Length: 295
Image (cartoon, rainbow, N blue to C red; front, side):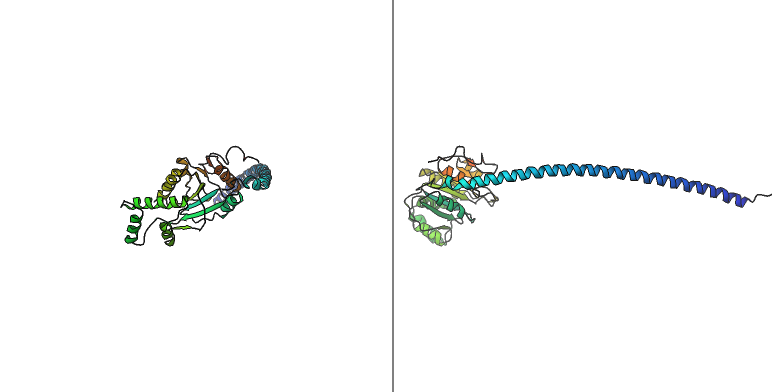
């Protein structure tokens, strides 16, 4: 019998193809099994980590709820004693609330001061830098008040000094009413004999490219010359704090006056405590040490 080489070669090729296919199938099956095992390990690891996460989340949730309950109790306690802490603590004082380039609402501060028993809250706002509608008007006021300087800053500082001395001494002059008509300052028609304390709300630092500190410095000098104590206050959401400026000059401050703790600190500072209080980095502590004297 003669072997046909063509069929022999085909048979050999078929055998090798079968072996190759078998090897490939075996490798694929092994790879699939390895992949499945890796998937199982990964799923088990994820489940374990997820369980740990759930446990930590549960613990944090419990801790947060505990803090929240504690905060609610503290708030409830503070609310129950707040009126007692501030009522009639500043009885009979005349307080000047001076706002410099600030248009925020501080009605809550005014109401707190009234609740604390102050005689009057005199509100004055400086809206912008002092200017005059004409050179003739400027020369008139320079001559009237004997201002012998010609540079812009010197004139403004002298005018501010006259302005603050008049307000602090309850002696409003023609200059005050002129500046009010020009929209440069604003004040009411309160009648008072003197100022016992000055509260400054200063927003002149909002433009960092041009820090205007002339009103601040002149006010500080005028109040110190008359021996009138002062403090600076602001709310927590103020973008550019003025507290560092006043702290550097030894003037007490409260940077969270929009909170009850801030209002209590304000009352305590006016009562005689000194320092920087509140929640910002310039604060030494939340409220002054010691408690308001119980009468």
